Image 1 (cartoon, protein in one colour):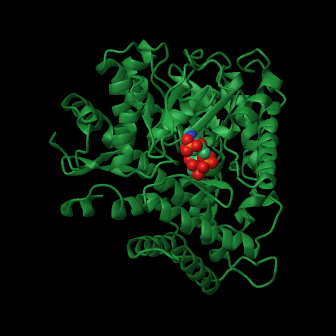
Image 2 (tube, protein in one colour):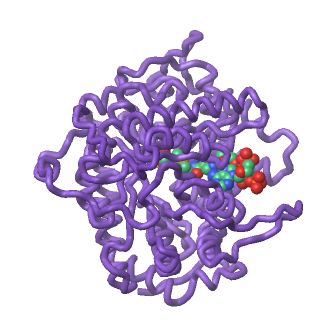
Amino acid sequence: MRYEVIGPMAERFDEVLTPEALEFLVTLDSEFAARRVALLDTRRARRDRFATGQLPDFLPETIGVRADPTWRVAPPAPGLEDRRVEITGPPERKMTINALNSGAKVWLADFEDATAPTWDNVIGGQLNLMDALDRRIDFTDPRGKRYALGEELATIVVRPRGWHLVEKGIVVDGRPISASLVDFGLYLFHCARRQLAAGAGPYFYLPKLEDHREARLWNDIFVFAQHYLKLPQGTIRATTLIETITAAFEMEEILYELREHSAGLNAGRWDYIFSIIKNFGQWPDFVLPDRAAVTMTVPFMRAYTELLVRTCHRRGAHAIGGMAAFVPARDPEVNATALAKVQADKQREAGDGFDGSWVAHPGLVSTCREVFDAVLGERPNQLDRQRDEVSVTAADLLSVDKTPGQVTESGLRSNIAVALHYIDAWLGGAGAVALWNLMEDAATAEIARCQLWQWLHHGTPLAEGGSVTSDRVRAMLAEELSSLTEGRGDAERERAAQAARIVEETALGEDLPAFFTTGAYARHLGPRRRSLAAAS
Ligand SMILES: CC(=O)SCCNC(=O)CCNC(=O)[C@H](O)C(C)(C)COP(=O)(O)OP(=O)(O)OC[C@H]1O[C@@H](n2cnc3c(N)ncnc32)[C@H](O)[C@@H]1OP(=O)(O)O
Ligand SMILES: O=CC(=O)O
Ligand SMILES: [Mg+2]
């Protein structure tokens, strides 16, 4: 196989992109690239079937796995026994130190929803992880503030990019390599032994899986990679995000496929909502109200989290809660409301049996910890809560029509503004931003643009009168663009205009593209070479 590194070699990138590490990535690619492509075809075919009216159901062919009460996943690995608070964030240098010092048990170092996949973010993130493990990441910022690792650090769990994305910076036989393999492979290659030496291990979060065959692919990659790197089988552990509607029907099967490597499941609520709209957006029964009305207690979301806890605990696996999007604010009143909302969200999760949950900001760690402390006490988890009383049907998982709420003008405007501002930030290299006191990332931005498409597609009535029309959306988009560009220089104005064009292409067209990130990455982010643009 011929490979080439297209991405520029910034300072110290040669420490990440060593010939041996690249050889490992290319070997992974030659073993598994074709299976990835086939699974992406399966995704497309399934979405086409949903478009003709078919709905998902629990699989008849895997009834044996679900009915067999005997199997369990591996016991928790060192550093993953107690996961009551997990902080998430991109592996940017300062945030790496802040997250590791935050007091959370786990840090999800995110190459997915929270990272705009620029070459610098991707390779720089790997370097930061290596430096953190070597304790050579300390620095002083231009204001003179010193950043240094403390004594007690969170366990690192890396989230590689999903199967849908490619990395243009590394080209194998003329085509960009799978982004998942790059993020997984570089971290495993450089940090597995560093982690083992520190008494932990190479741990991962697996994003955006759509079915158990995708979990099987990951498991096969783990087995192959452990063999290649001479790591004991079972060293790798992975928590799978259940954040697509189709994966919700295959939670047991996903745990089963990964069982020697599984570290449980996580309820990735934002991508889950996105997946519902994406797959069933054209059906009137699936029209959702304003995003703020799609809470965790509406029937279809409740069914999903209840099923997740029950499934995990039946198999000895951790059930990890999701992200409340409220982040601390400077205004004391807004801040108090945000903290109260996060607290209520974590109370629901801890009460339902989750073993821990996510926070987006160091200022929320203590809120989450106090809630889980109150329920767990000295116990590291509540795997003993079996939740046998929970019974969730396919109809419950799909009961989107029971979601109360309306589509309002402010909900419409908010989606337009969030999609525009987020994509603008993403084009500028930031994958997570605080907008109007909420954390926004790739998953929440996908909801924003998909809701626009859904409401336009159905000409959804607005609570105030009138309906969602193309003219109305375009007028609001123009207003939001003009307010975003006010006072900006030429380059930043052009970036915002580009973001508006992406919103138009991915929300206002006839078809609903599966992800905004794939096309936007191909055209606007990452290293480029003329002949590569077409391939990606
Ligand atoms: C749908 C999902 O997948 S959720 C998971 C993916 N999303 C995420 O991970 C989002 C993570 N959160 C973030 O990126 C950030 O909190 C944001 C962008 C929302 C807000 O960041 P900021 O605007 O910098 O917040 P703020 O100014 O309050 O930050 C205060 C300090 O906390 C730090 N901080 C904030 N969030 C984090 C974090 N998640 N990890 C580490 N440090 C953080 C900031 O770097 C800053 O440090 P400093 O005081 O040393 O300069
Ligand atoms: O990754 C998490 C989500 O909510 O999406
Ligand atoms: Mg997600």
